Image 1 (cartoon, rainbow over the protein chains, first blue to last red):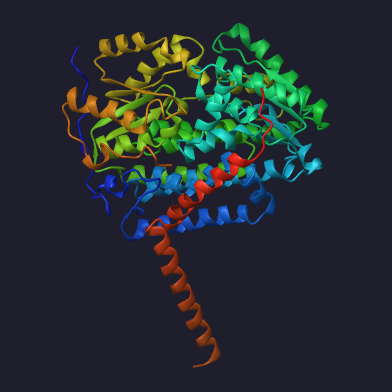
Image 2: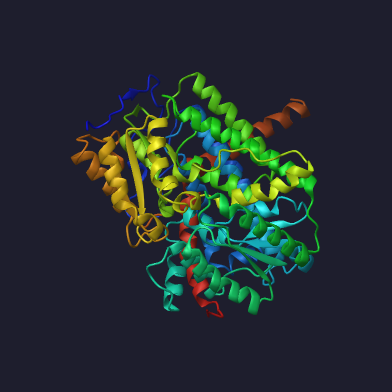
Length: 532
Length: 55
């Protein structure tokens, strides 16, 4: 079959300011030589947003217990790199794209700062506010927080989100210490480094201690069960924090598991009520459900835009924002709804003007598989270096259905099924589990829907769920004539495959198979092994 | 010059000065250069903390 090729689109508007982004890197350095020049208007806008981020960090740093926490928890050192994370995710962006990226990134920063502030307030080692600690329900990092949608006065608090998940976004080397600690204590080295690092934080006595109770979930895989086992042992036996195991069915597309899944949600809610003394509030639940539906509606519309010649909301920012909004927020924070509205306005404005985010669009790609977390801004690199537009990624291909949002007796029953569905179809697990239909068939349906001419397939080398399908992906791509680029990585550990190792796999494919030259050759090889 | 005009002049000069200083920090990435120098000290400090390491 002939290879499918998208016709190159040239941007009629010149990109203002810097065009050779690789020149900003200092070889072997931790940080860049200088910030990007984006033309006067966009540079001033970025500067203004940078001041806003410093204000957020400043407000966080003036609270004495937060400073105390900075000197207690090793993972807090990674938060020195917050402004650089935003620089990485906004590289090469101008106009509406820069504004959308800041809307997403800056809100996530504010939300994580609030989460950290809450954690340290309740933490027995730091703030030790016992009354406040009692209104916190601990949840996993990769856990849908739908069961908290009916508790307006409780906080769903994930210790793993700031200690490992966000830390690795900030600093590629953040999890290495904890992975080593876990392995020193005999945990296998060939499991997913994400739950392994989370277990390592607990083993290293580096997890804050707070909360009335905890809900652990089997998202996303058997590796997370391993990590949860280690963490729950310490929580229950030493810290006296009771833990509920919420086992969401892995065969989430099957009708015969849904009743069981809904029953588990009921049991989890009952457990929270028993241990916190707070009662489920249906008014608040349906208020959150309306916000969840609005977020779903916006995401569906953005993805529809991405099926056209002028995609608007895409790349690493879409993945990160979707993950935060869908999983951690789940309708509970009104500010995310306001942000969705602003994003929609910007996206529609850019779409009407037929704006493009790079000088050229050479390929339209679906990014699939579990992304390299230490290099999540790789999608920006794909666009800037090779003109490959990452139309959507596996993390953003989540629930598209509306849930019940009006309070009726029938909908109160339906709500348990809706919460079960949201939990079962949590980001990543909705594709890595549930059979080849959701992982393999759906990918090639998306290729057709989005008029894509390329697949970037992350291969997380210790993710058994995905690696078993390697040959089937290749066969299907060959049948359809779609160039498929494998990109190996180990999620949290750049010592196994470095960022340049990730880039090299694309560089080699583009030069040898596609016979193309990079759009920005300065980005092809970067000495960023020591970089945050 | 009356007092109000003086006040606005000082305000303008102060704001301009602040802008020049902060914009220089921003564009030359001085904030990140400085925090990257702090990190090694913090890591050495964390290594010295006694921890109850166990499964």
